[in-house]
Image (cartoon, rainbow, N blue to C red; front, side):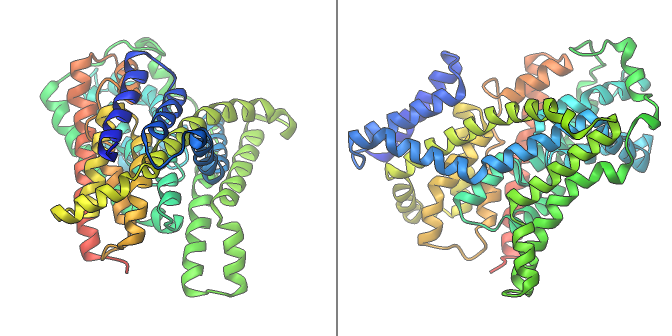
Length: 452
């Protein structure tokens, strides 16, 4: 069977299992990966399940520890009040007039170690409280500002699963991905904020009742005493530590190669080690702020690791799905088509990621699958720019076409009290702005700063 036909059948199978039959995403992805193996003539039937298991295990080995540690960091930041402190400091920094921009920055920073949906859950009470102080106005602006910052770094900056696995699939240094991702994310977040300003004025939606605190209690959230929160720089330390260690490893590998300093930074700047140290720091922060003994933190760690386990399974399932498409020959076939039609790898990555997003809803699964498909093409025919820009283009494409099959769609709709049409006009449209702007910024940077 032709690889493109296998792709269509596989995507349809994922769509049917997850959307129509409500099958768990992990089970659906593994089942679809097995289906690909059965349809691919290159894979003997007796080896299909083993091939899927190997690809699943490879992804878990690459990103399992990092995701688990990131989950612990995020849980501790929320439980200790550190995330609340970071948000308040940014509000004070930008002032009341630009309080929506402070929510963009808060989401931008917090979504580096914390998953974007979690960041939205965390910050939406503060956004609602801000709207209450404004007489119920600017509700869409504040809600979208959180999504603008959180979604942007979630897409472009490790250690969130999508860019983390893409870097592993495409064999790109994680420090380079972090530095370029942070650079791409700044103009993208500002573009999303500009859209939030525009659509808020156009729709003029006042604050509504939603799950969580009733409107009468929202002011208490925003007025919690500062003394109850940890200090700002201590709150920020678990976020900055892994970024600095991983970046130092990248820089030392370039300017001090084969030295003792490079060996030390290689050990401390390994993503797993850097996040392990940051998780330990976040646990100490939580213990000190809550007055707990370290042995009393086991419950917090268990809750975080349980949440991480689900993410790891789905992420690795997406990796197995993408790996089997590569095994079926899709990468080679797409490479031939791209050369025949003169399509660049960045355009191809953006378009394929958009296809997977529309079809099955998960941006992470789309990023993982497309990066696995394109990795052999990059190795066989390196582009005239650093492949990190292909990674960024894939990330951008994975945001275009968000609709009712995207879990983030329902998180936003439920937590804001908007209806489905309003959510399409706000969150879905903003993600399209995010994706297209991210692609254009990556394209421009690949021309101005090819890094090769």
